[in-house]
Length: 166
Image (cartoon, rainbow, N blue to C red; front, side, top):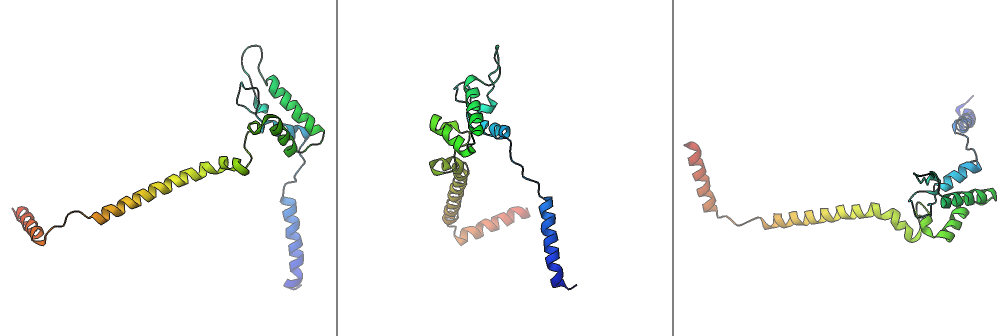
């Protein structure tokens, strides 16, 4: 068999090997979707700064998710059961509670600044420091200090040599 005839067989075999090596992407169960969404929305009780799925009021006779978090988690589960998409569920929470209900802000519009500024500001600070240092070094190099006459320099050199010889 020539190389031209072997190539299609090789290509099919390689494609088959890659396909078998890739993990099978399984559909998430409704419980997994609900847990993931519960961790993406804030508990809006005002008593904690946790995700609804992680709300845990400690102490006393009560320990666990508060009533507000339980209500939010039930609403998420009900919406998943009714067939709504994750984005639609999150959007409904944003409409009800405002954008602060989301643990992470959307990476679009004005909220994009929340993602960009932690990277941009340190870079701008470093650039500003480098600019100031470079400008300062240029000024120091240009200044150079006072002019010294060749006669004074020769006299200092001869004085130094005389002291070293003694």
